[in-house]
Length: 164
Image (cartoon, rainbow, N blue to C red):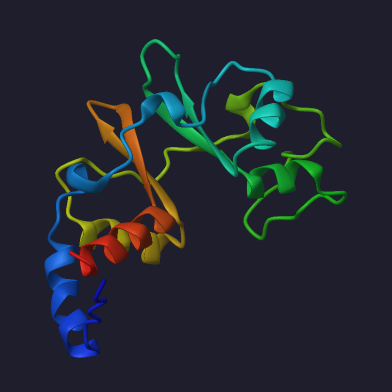
């Protein structure tokens, strides 16, 4: 077996071509494997899912799959935090176990996550990841989650693209 390596110049020429690929061609469409939870699900259910995943997409209901938020490990860090955070622009954050103001996924989630459509290009997704400092984006069609794309997924796809 002969292994052929591309030069750096050849790889650089492929980047703009990779950027133009529509998201729908490379997104993870395994909706049944995405970490999904209804906004009315209990904190216990949220924590049980987060033992297996670093994020959860929050939907209005499992039947509709209308995306309303995301819960990440960072959101749970806020919940577990032993001290209240003081905002420079208002009241302290009440997102803490000390305040006991939440019981459901909808109370913990970050609302309206950055999203993209299946028609957007890889370059659009990468720009959103950089600008918003995120590593995963839901693919949304008609307000319903249709899949996701992660930085890890893009790295794997670019590696495969280079080796074609």
